Image (tube, rainbow, N blue to C red; front, side, top):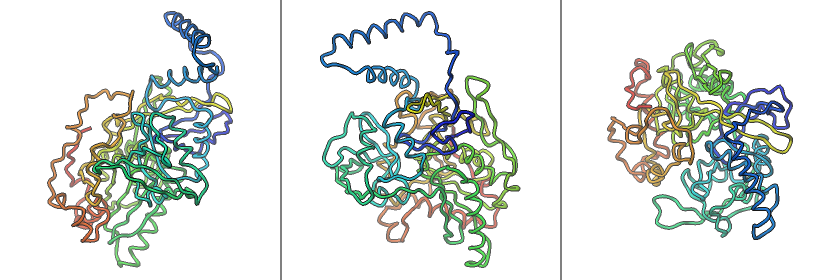
Length: 466
């Protein structure tokens, strides 16, 4: 999501980013129009009359007395829901949840969830959160909260139920693909303070995990690179073998920070373009060497992604892939290639509206298809991963999603020509070898094998299509 400074003062702090129940979107903050409403097509006038007639019929004849606000909100929700999954009306609980996330600190479980066919489905647990520590995984369905069935209920109600004071607990009933029966997990709520960037030196390779694209991520990763180089010099007496940029389960964030992070590894060329129906929405972002050239100084880079990598994560992966600066490994990404504009209506409500699509340097739209890894690497260390991957929620699964102009078929998107014997190992075999994260282990070993050889990105043979 992208947040732009708005000339209009709002209580929503436009420099922050939004992480609500749906995946974080690319959002621009703009003032809503205060006059000069778009002219209503004369052919639609009759439909507006019909809408008012239905309103009167409901008010007069419904079995129970109906509140005006409920009817009007329902009409607004229906109008925006007919467009795409990321356009919606925010007020009351949904706006409060938004403001809580803007603060960047709250108490709860640390989950990114969506409503999927009436059920609550986990997109990803935040790294280091109580949810992750309790073993909750992307793709899990939450069927009950403290024994109460949550099906075809307001998602905000479920999210509110999962929030609560730190130290208190809630019992979740989970349905997970690959398991025969649902099971209960008790999670103790905690204070959720996500660290946008963490890093460590593993076997001579710098591993940088970007958990969200909030303010100063570009600078944070630059600092991480500097620290990792120092660690490598002290611990191994040499240079880094390469960098793993881990964007798995990163739902997005600031477009500006996605551009800054991409620019960190690029000296020139395009990063991403944004194109809308109106020319004013068209923008091109190019590498400006804001970090004085490639901060990694040509070190080979692997970008790790999965089905939970969305929006800003896909911008970075697509830019480094198209520019042949990095090899993308893992699984096909979420496929959210649209930009939302955030329009405050007043202090109590706002509209989030899809206004543009974004494209990779090669001109590919990420919408629906996502970023296809150069090397598809399954998460073998998780015994349930394969079953969950088959049911992973992506943009193309969301009702009413924007259609990519190109014809996309899953069987083409998932094509992979690499047949590595390690992909046949079981989770038990990996555990015996002490491998807890197969995808990360595979990326590190790849960088170790290619250390000192020609650029990894140039040597890779991309297998995917977008």
